[in-house]
Image (cartoon, rainbow, N blue to C red; front, side, top):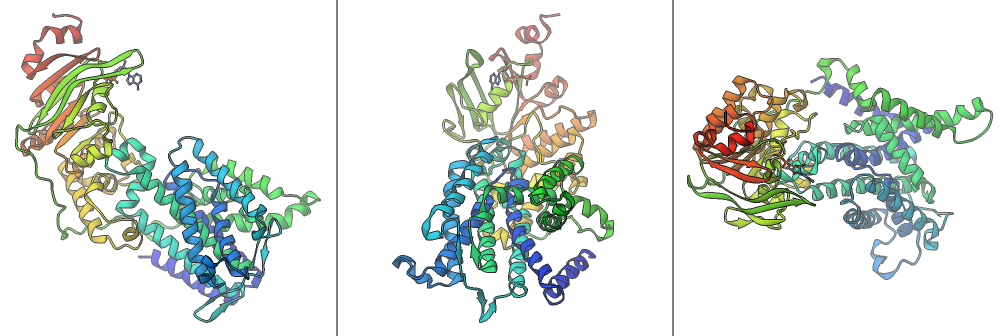
Length: 599
Ligand SMILES: Nc1ncnc2c1ncn2[C@@H]1O[C@H](COP(=O)(O)OP(=O)(O)OP(=O)(O)O)[C@@H](O)[C@H]1O
């Protein structure tokens, strides 16, 4: 457990730093701590959640201005008079206000996709900056001075050396909370955002909620940093909360490494020190004053993105001897209870029906009056030449897409207006034609994502690690499903390192982790070797015998003919045949479609 020594050395350094370092360097460390808190939120938002924000500095400003206003205004409005100039109560107000603003802005912008979200963050970053500068009660562009120092249980934190401890304790706490969150059921849902909305929703993840959670947390980290900043400086004006600083925070995240919480510390540290150093030296070298450091930062980012897109943290990790690195393996406690299972329907019970399902894309009719049914304890194959409309049908059946006409009924309920998440909750689970995994996450965690709906502990429990028992049950289930599909030897491998065929099997394990009664498999045998196909066929037969209903779209005819109970054949969006494998093999319409005529 050598990494514990590294952490201990870091803690000893932090404890001694204000006692032994000159004031100037302690001030620099304070800034690093304050910036790192904001960057940590950005890592969560941008690095983990894949949402770029230029507007974090505005949230820092919100925290700073709230406390500046509340602690310096002589005559507060009556409804705020209870804060009585207390910085701690001002923090409470700042957090509440930031949460309200973040929820409002999140509701407006988080549904935006592509470059609209970053543009939205620029817009609110600029707006809040000008709001601080124009409101006379906020001191306009001159700002507000004379903020009180913080005091903590009677101890006045009026010097950099004293507030240092508060800044760093809050930062380390935030890092701990963030790491806990990421290594939990909620964290997996957040990490799944990068694997695409479709996959995450099909696993039962409410992607909008997950986005909102990290947006809120990152805004709160920024506001707390702003509160600390205001009482460290004891003065605020709009300059440090503008778009320019928003971009600097993003630079810090990128340079430190958006893939790890520690990247926040590295990025904030390197850029703060570099900025200081460049501001001292560049004017001497260039012969005049100017913001040359910004140019150097720009070049640095370009260089870093070329050479190490993951930032500095992964490079630093590589420098640490292998035996000192943190053991990544998650321990699975086999003694915890199994997750409860849903009762499977009686064999033969009708589970899924398509009634005259038609899907038009403009003038193209991809599915035309398609009818099919799927019963508990059977395997049904949907086959047809390329472009026949199988995937489109698959999407209608799993509520990823909505029929133009007709309807799909699942367990007696129409799927009209239902989301794929709701359908997943009702007991339908699926795999994808183009594998959708989180390649840098372990095989075990990828599969545990499938069990998302079977856990209930929320963000607070996760952040404080109060959900360990439930987490162990989820991981135990994931391990069981992986062993069941034959991937038990790969639990801790990165999912992206598996062969394509194995990745498909992993998707089946993930789907099984959801405890479905209907399993939809999109080309499960593609890319599998002969033996793997045999193993898959055995697994599907066993699942069928247990009472699961399985629908698969597949091109491998040997695999289909030896496995399934019934086949529906499509051509040009229509059903041209339906029956047992032996009937389909001799059906003239099918032979015509596949071979261009009977031989
Ligand atoms: N979103 C879409 N917009 C427009 N046309 C689409 C869309 N999705 C599918 N199509 C068209 O619908 C038809 C059926 O496509 P689909 O992908 O369902 O066929 P498929 O049988 O699954 O083919 P393959 O076996 O190659 O996967 C094709 O002509 C395709 O181009």
